[in-house]
Length: 312
Image (tube, rainbow, N blue to C red; front, side, top):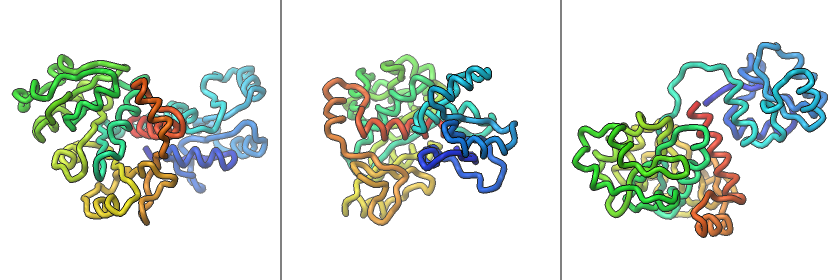
């Protein structure tokens, strides 16, 4: 989602706005005003803007008490400039303009082992509390179900319904865990036609469909990407991955994500975001089949907020 914001605050607020995909208004009328009530100069700047423009405020305890005394809902005021705290408030403040929101997100990668399934599982867990989520494992490994603590029924049970698959069929065969409907189990992968019909039908089953797709070179990944409003492509920053990425037909609007990277770069190419190497967080998640924490978990939090904004 693209929206213009007047940013009345310091560098931390500007950084959060950038991570949330908000554009500085640069003299144009903003769609929303972000104001740090802890900063007197920021308050003065915000006061000069039209009162009809929606506000999202950040406040400490004293400012929050003052706002509550003036009748403002304290739950609509963030206590930090973290994107995870600001994102839901920004979504709630922005005017509701009809648009083609993201309904299908396909996650693929330049090769195996880049963290596709772990990303899909963590996005599903984080988004299920606010959206109806269906997660589709189009790889045939059953790994997505494992991470989400369930055992979805095998794809072979759906193969005969390829040409007539409906949301009602999926509701019967989907496993539900962590608030997510999970579709597609081991030991075989779906055909391209079945994968496509499943994703189409899942759009009527849930508000958001997350797809754990095969690698970019697989025709199913390309086909599923064409059905998605948003495609995420994970890649390592190594010569083989770079060569594969350069040779692949990556959609121009795709979010290319650097996996196990310190910076949002893949070679000379700027990446949309970076997922840090965090073996401790992955180990802890593996031991309990739960959402990842640590630095990796914070990166997942940020991506989840961006996907939520994209879907609003």
